[in-house]
Image 1 (tube, helix red, strand yellow):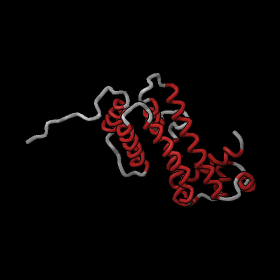
Image 2 (cartoon, one colour):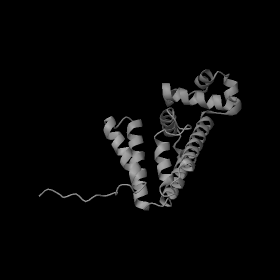
Image 3 (cartoon, one colour):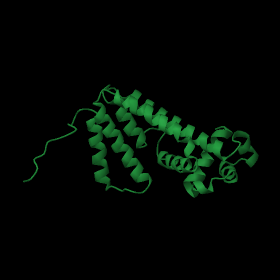
Image 4 (cartoon, helix red, strand yellow):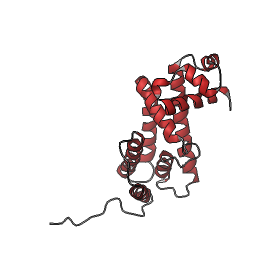
Length: 191
């Protein structure tokens, strides 16, 4: 791994373990095992480091969705399923540390809200792709909003579903991407 990647890993580790308020070039240098001068060589300041963290995160996520979609033999709903799986950390590039890295990026964005444009642009690109995924565009959007909401609720510690409920929600969303289960079922309302 090159020094730049080690520095970015160190920055993510600092934010994950100590919080974005403790993201200093000195702390990153210690976590990455390089000198502060080494950090400054690659990143002239904390803002540039944060921007690089955001760029790396968005590239990882994009690669994860693309990779998972390429593995899916069923064309209809392929990208939506891949988006769902990548968001849940099922891709090697998102994996178990994805939530922590993403939470770190979310926290870093709070310090530099002017860099939200890159994340918004990524969200817009994925929304357009999901709307052209062969599913009803509204259904694809509902699935995306549900999985984003689940991820956000869990990562901001606002929501903790029982494990069986979480699994059932994810399986229902996945089923909706295949047409195996109707998105809406008519239920008789008690009188």
